Length: 492
Ligand code: NAP
Image: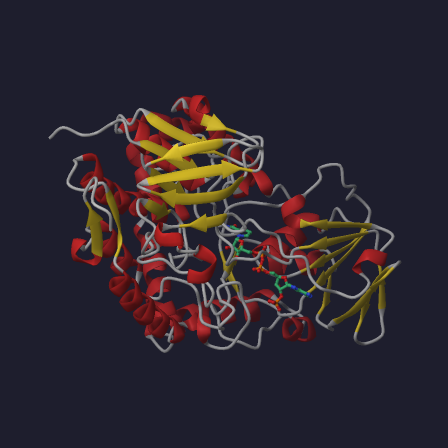
């Protein structure tokens, strides 16, 4: 069947998902693809996050495009820098730089008469038939509202705005936040800092996750035999863990969740010798309510290096350091805010206006959503990758994005084949999806009584609330009855 390869595509965001979309479109022969990236290079979260200790807690060979395996990973869990290098390398290998425009932060997308007009803050305007928004989930750093933060006379740094020039060795450092970032930071800084305090408003459950370096012999074997890479990627034990996790999060009282709870409780009990320290590190909510921390060494490190685990609340920040609710002043040279992100922003603050003046902000007034995490009514040919309500958390987001792209490709087939000019979910299907998703989300472990970035402002988890297997099935074949397809020249 003949395809229209002259459709104009704009991909917004040059992170992992945007790179994927651009590669796939170009491989399909599309001649008119523009990639807009706000920063000076690609990489998304791996470009922005450069804090000490950053690595990916998903096994490196599973956090790799299926079509671009990488024999060179230095360890089972790859350091952030290597992941950034991988994306830079893939960008070069697939010739994406010629379609990429850097320093182009999108500030509006407006639909009229079958065309999307995308503008950037730097003054670029691009017209497109199809828009792919791949702007990531965690890219608006959350600065905590702590009294006196501005009065601190030392250095304050957010983990996602890292300055490599910050002095660390021998310094008195306070890390605020005990999510995946805070834990990785503390593991890396213990032993380097002169004094290290980990300020934990909520201690976290920690899943043990050994991280072993690959030897040169192993890498050589990966180079020679890609089946060995697949053996790691599809390792039955890793896959079983993922399945157990996904089964557990949707059924908090399941056997699978009890197994997870037992593992993390045993990890705490067996790894931390001092009963008083153990209690300071014990969370008061259920495992996996917040994103599970996977760490090879956090408990060991905080004992070896005498890290101060501070669970007393932060009263305020003073010129010399952090004052906690017990009256103690923790004197510091550097405060690192590992306080996370505004996870409900997605493409915002860009202003997105669909058919008939439909406003994204209005549509998301209650919570950010999209049908199957992909499409919105009245936003024709406008698709999300790793958008709202997709699976997030302890999964490979590359696998998520690849499956989502498989779904979007099938929607695009309708357009490139000429069967229709525009496609988007119907309002009715959107409402059914949103109601069902919201109801299901209330029953997940994420809603079992803790704060986390998974929760929307209505207190309901914003995530995919069904199993990963169900996600894979849904992505494999769109239900076209849920879509409105508008033929060329026919006003909707
Ligand atoms: P996060 O999970 O949202 O954790 C933020 C931390 O800051 C929490 O401990 C929170 O405490 C604390 N906090 C926030 N405001 C505070 C305040 N005013 N006073 C004291 N404490 C405050 O953020 P994150 O650790 O940056 O991680 C975000 C996500 O990034 C992760 O869940 C993960 O998806 C991703 N990530 C992945 C990796 C990886 O290896 N794959 C590594 C790093 C990050 P409460 O819990 O009490 O709110």
